[in-house]
Image 1 (spheres, helix red, strand yellow):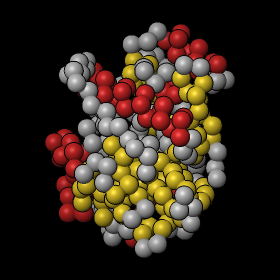
Image 2: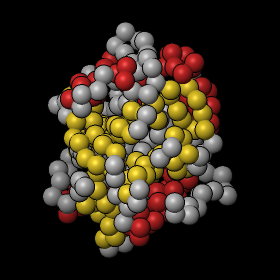
Image 3: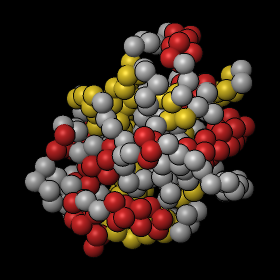
Image 4: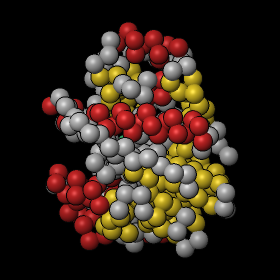
Length: 296
Ligand SMILES: [Zn+2]
């Protein structure tokens, strides 16, 4: 595995109160259940759709503090609508020897998430999932851990997240933390989580935010979690603040360093908020980056 530099912010981040608020999902809207299969070396993986999160282009979510015309210009340059920014809400499934691994769980069936149907499209029953790996504890990643009725959605799965992320989730309280408590196993950021999957510390979005690097032979794929949200704006302007980051300064430093590393290494990624299926490459473009979707 390539050497990674853990980003540490030395100065205390000054985060406006508005940015500390829990993320809001302006317009979570339905998606068509879909499972798109692809290979990671010898493993079979599926990108799974859950919902769409459409955010206004008004500087409240992406490009916080930037003039809206500047954000609109970037969207227009990419031939995208300039009134709103559509983000996918997706998850990843990996079938590997001895493990059926789900990475993140979407917003959940309670608010109309279709991940359970996408999973069935991949011919996987919830009870077959052995491990759920959580990148971080925001509702669009952990909402699907519980059923509509509030029970465990994946009754036989161990739920894995980094120790600082579990502490963060518990500090916020809420029903999901209580429901999953006996199923949670934590790991130190950077640890191998199960054979073939290593966690990658990407702090700032949340304190214990982790990517997951899946390796089979010489083939690798990194699930970047919420290191970048918009395949257009977050890549073109990695230095711009996104309202969803708990620590804006640390989030920015992590995003800038990780995107530079990914563009240099040409490692394939899965990004849960990029246009479905969210699989492809980050490439250098001007003073930022752009997205090249590409399934293996
Ligand atoms: Zn997210």
